[in-house]
Length: 306
Image 1 (cartoon, rainbow, N blue to C red):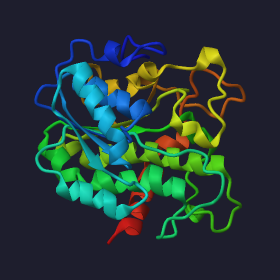
Image 2: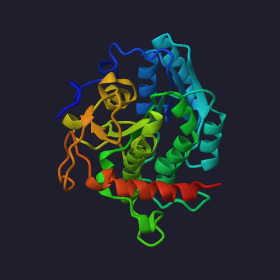
Image 3: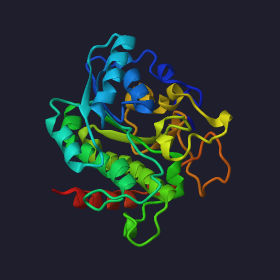
């Protein structure tokens, strides 16, 4: 059953129509382009104070200027963040002052062709898409709790259907590296992050949800030769960021956490991955499993301990 009247073609402006985010503070990772930039713009247009966390600050300056101009909101700023470097995520969290009402973990990489590891020995997609966001999210717990009703948005993908988290070989030390299962594992981890954050922190007024934005042509496809999804199943950037904006700010999902959304509504739990492309993919049971979520959180805590 749908929770909202929105769907596949809804845009960020549709889902935030009439929403007033004055006095709210938001942090959006990977906001230098694509879905992150549009999510930041949408939140700023609703009156939020928005910080764009980007790997290349010089590339994000134009985005900040554009958002300020298009929304008339000057409370839009930039901060550096390299999610593959745990010290960078810790530094951002340590330097944050005051409450944080909205955290959108949007940044990511996809289908890196060859196995790459961080200096810690972590597989790059898992390190960037999940461990970096885990480190940032945990570091910001105090700021989120201080907001008295914070929301965390974890951007996943239908790619999560390509692989569960392989706990016995997270970093491809035994199995042959595959760009897509590595991506899938990291996107499953992003769903589990939302499940466990909600379980641990709902008592602090914090809820977290994950989502599939859909098929949108962005820089994410730089390793895949561009978007190959059939035209009828593609979304514009404004449509793709709609579910993120809804989960970040809409009163229609107030108090809801630990769920996986697509097309602005909770996704169906599916028993297997579809063999044909479509407008939705559903969510795998392993991605919502509370036991998996707890286990992954504990492993991440051990891996990222200073």
